[in-house]
Structure formats: structure tokens, C-alpha cells
Picture 1 (cartoon, helix red, strand yellow):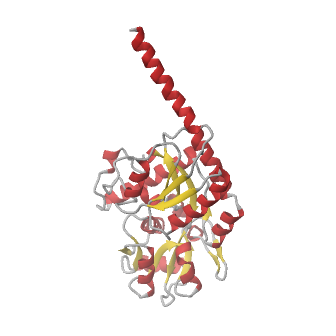
Picture 2 (tube, helix red, strand yellow):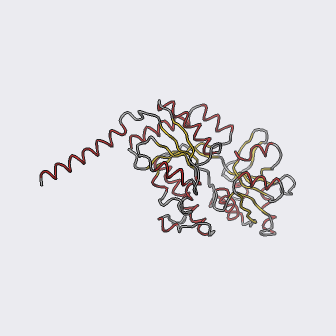
Length: 337
């Protein structure tokens, strides 16, 4: 009996020692950041810029690779999660990854991760220059007078841009005819070719089209107005429709993550390097030039944001009959709960 006791104690102490050893002197070698979306996209760009700055503080390389495929970034997330939970593998992801579970590509809640949120570019609602809508009020009143007659483009049902469109409808009382596209670029192209009258995508994605006069911005779908060089100030939709505060803002959450059971002292080192990276002149300049609002949320604050996004996205997809898996079966609460 004593022998069994001492063997158990040795195993327990060995496990504790291993946990502490994992964080001692971390990092001792290069770190890999597995980005779940394609190279050149918003998530990839954010992760490469911030990872390069983090490397300066961590004193090791942070090598970014892309593992795409599946649904909701499920291939990349699965690849990263299967690696040892020691801080040497990061997962570059975005708010869209919260749909992986209800789309059948991920059998866990997003709370198995701890997040480091870089931020994102806010959504803007724009129309083509040949439409008669010179303000958001013009557009909303026209939609109210003829519900479902005005075609609105955004990326796929359940995407952040579609959710912002739904929130605009709920907060203003308007009803549009939603036309889903495979991404932001196709939806913007549809607006320019006249397939739709308005489009909802991020300011970062629209900026060149706005400057070129291909699209006319009506309002930002965030509480504050936004000044764009060469275009002036784009007003907030909240100014005209304060009821939007019940449904918005729904913002991008681009960043990176580590497995939640990574040793706390390791996560602390990563978080410190992350915060320092966001504060660098390079990242600040990049964010300003590309119209990104930096977040910097980590720990419990970041987890709460992803829990909210997971609940909102998952149940919206389920109610639209665009989900394969019932969110309740994954333990995802409804947004109102």
C-alpha cells in the first residue's frame, strides 16, 4: 500500500514539475502561428504584422503558416489544437471561427482557447453612386415604404456582415432583400455592377472603392463617426437610429489564441509580448492607415467577447436553417440567456 502511495506521489509531483518547467524561461525556441485563413486576407495580415513585433519582445521567431480548409477555419484550428499545449503553437483566427461547431467542423466550444484580440475594421453601409439615397435616413425610409424591394449584398448568411445587416433592420424597422455572396469582394462587386443597391462590408475592405467613387458611404455601424482621409467623416448610424444600440455594435475580432489549458505563466509571457506589440509604432501606424480599431483584449475579457460572438453567430445560423448542428447540443447558450 505504501509503495502504491509513494508511486502516486512521485507521478503527481512529476506532473506539477512539468507544468512549471513548461513556463520556466519561456520561450526557448521559435513559436509557430497557425493562421486558419488564406495568406493575404485580413486575419493573415493582422497576424503577420503583430507576430513580427511580438518576436522582438519574445527574442525568438514567430513563424506564421497557413492551414486553410474545412468550415469556419476548422482545419487550422484542429491542427493547432492537436499540438502540445505549451505556448509554442498559436492559432491565428477571427470571429468567423465561432461558426465551425454548428457547421459540423469542430466538436467543441470556442472556450477551449484563450484569445489575444488584435481588433478589426468596423462595418460601413454603402450604396452605388447612381442610387437616390444620399443618407441612411433616405435609404431606410425607402425600405420601409417598400419592404423587401431594395437588394442588399453581404457575405454568406450568418457572417458578421450579414449579422450587421440584420441588426440594422431590427434597429431601424426596415426590411431589405438580402443577397448572400461568398465573400466581401464578390458582394462589393455586385454593388458596382448593379446586382444590389447597397452593401455591408468593413471599411478596410471598402476603402479603395470609396476613394475611387465606386461606392458612396452612408453610415458606420458603430456608435462613433469615422474620419477617412480624402472622404471626410462618415456618420454613425446610431445618430439617426439610436435603437441600434440594442443590437450593435457587432465587431470583428481578429487575433490569435492558445489552448486554454496552456500553463498560466506561459500565457502571461505571450500576453505581455502581445500588448507590447500592439503599442509599437509600426502596428499603430498600420492600424490607422488601414482603418483597424485595435482591441488588445486578453484573458477573461477576450473570452467573454468570443462567447458572445459564438452565441450570436451560432444561433443566428441555426434560426436561418444554415447550421448542421444544433447549438444547444454543443452547450452554446442563446444570446438572450
